[in-house]
Length: 448
Image (cartoon, rainbow, N blue to C red; front, side):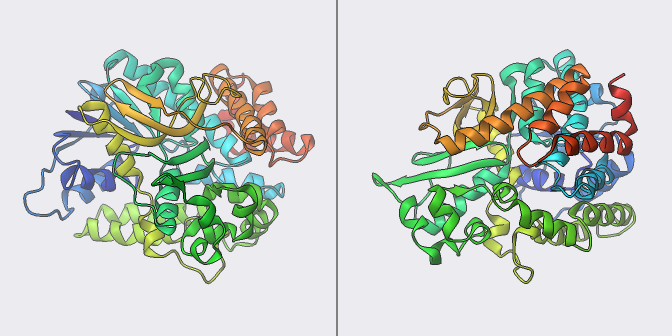
């Protein structure tokens, strides 16, 4: 079986390769081809993979790098896509334009997420077109952000052969279940009630032995404080909304505090990553120990994740760092699609009427069964008015962004900025779009 990683020079690619070489996913894939538009990054990550220490007897897949996308895709069974349009420098601009307007500067939520999607969607549509032409039977597992919008866009070309993943929802379930004393069975989400959009969702139930254990968890401040989301939201908010929110809902429930923290930081997350990556990739090309250098950078990078949502002195503990793992989710999805080992995962998938209050073709984030036929969302309970209201509003933004990116429609882009719940003024929305057009000249040219 052949796996192609589009964005193969990405920082987290070694996590995928390591999981393919040793452990439960070893042997599923025997050929990995990396494709990236940046030859320097491609060479750097290839050096990391070649020097990665693995246990004795590991099934290291054959590794190749290919600069031409069509050539890389020939014979592919599955494609992972993790590209960052504009690179880390683009993320810096996504954050800064919003912060200069006094609004949230985050790469996937609010104004920055809209800007990022307006660049990511056209690039990923080109990848999807290449797949349709070169390897039409291959599966696309997308974790290019913003994952929900990008997945919805590429499904217009690839249909249900495109599935989106994110590790934040699965990490939330794992950490909450541990705190509630609920054992999770590998490959099963029985008893798990999670619903939302990408980077906007809620864990609403954890049933074990016929009893929903979530209410007791929500009523216990000590147990809530034992895992990251409980500390981020505190004891009162989860109890009031009767759910444990996805960590990204921090930006909605504590919008003022998030803006204040980001605006007052010595540097934005994007600036940190841009500086780190410039130094790191240069070092990876020359150091005699590329894997060791990469591993040190990975730990430093994970420590700073969502730092604005935590008290200044608080560091992420080991359970927080290990709670998710997008490579595990991506490979579990891949194995289910390529073999006879079905699994249940929280993925970005078409609604298909599971949430009747939302459009059937809307991309939502739900528990789903994955097998060789694709991903089928599992039945779930009705949305509360609060959940429906926020999801519907953000979904209207996502639909406008995708339409703008697909059809080069500036009015749709303007509508997305106008409708977003974290953008509080039509005048600000207009200034944001103009600001991103100045920051990214190709975006302004795209409308013409």
